[in-house]
Every structure is written in structure tokens, then in C-alpha cells.
Image 1 (cartoon, one colour):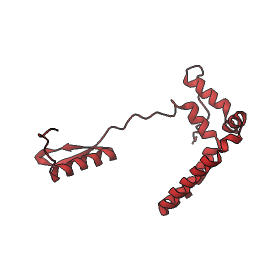
Image 2 (cartoon, rainbow, N blue to C red):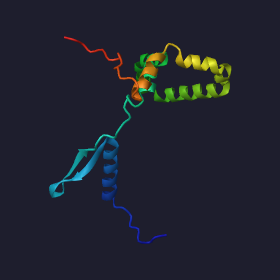
Image 3 (tube, rainbow, N blue to C red):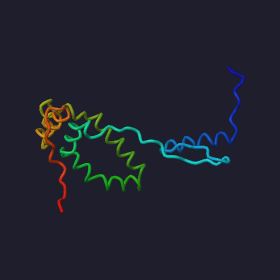
Length: 148
């Protein structure tokens, strides 16, 4: 073992934890003049845009499960804030039931594919996939701009 290791002082530990917290919030620590410390926003990481995931994003927006999730989200978030332990217990029970009952064995491959594409805009999703590859040049009619 290396004997030249020096333990951190409480001040060093505080500075290190402060820097980690700032980084987790999207800031970086900058030493200013006269020993002052400031925080500066980090550049936002490059995220994959919906154009790159055009096919999957359009498919998910059109799928009925997406609509159901959007409708349930406010009540689930309120429940999660009030009773986080109950939510975790319910989730664990639901996961356990899924593993024990194995409902996917009851579905055939054709039925699963039909459920995936049911009521979704398959032709629009194909159009988006072609447009992202550069074959189609027309704009989608998803965005409705207000005139006036």
C-alpha cells in the first residue's frame, strides 16, 4: 500500500462534495478573484432529438399506451409524492405477478405484433423513416401552426 497517501481534511471533503453536487445539478465550480467561488452552468449534453428517433418517437406518440400513460401521469405523480413506499411495494408486487404468471406466454407472435401496431399511424411512421433517410422531402402534418 502507498504510504504517501494523505487523508482529506474536512475542508477538502466539503469542497469535493460541493463540486460533485454542482456537477449533478449541471454547474461547475469556478474560482473567482480574491478566493471567491462562483458556479457556472455546464454546457447542456447533446441529446438525441426526435428527428433522429423519428420512427420510434412518432410510433410512440401515436400508440394508445402513450395516451394512457399521459392520462395517468398526474395522478401517479401525486400518489408517488404522498406515498412513495406504497408505490414501491405496489410496483414490486406487480413485477412479481408478471414473473409468476408470465402473461406473454398466452400471446402468439402475431397477436403481439398486432398489439404493438394497433391504432398507431404505421403509414406515417414509415413516411418519417423514409424522410429521415432522405428519400421523402415533404414535411409531416404533425405540427399545426396557428395563423393569425
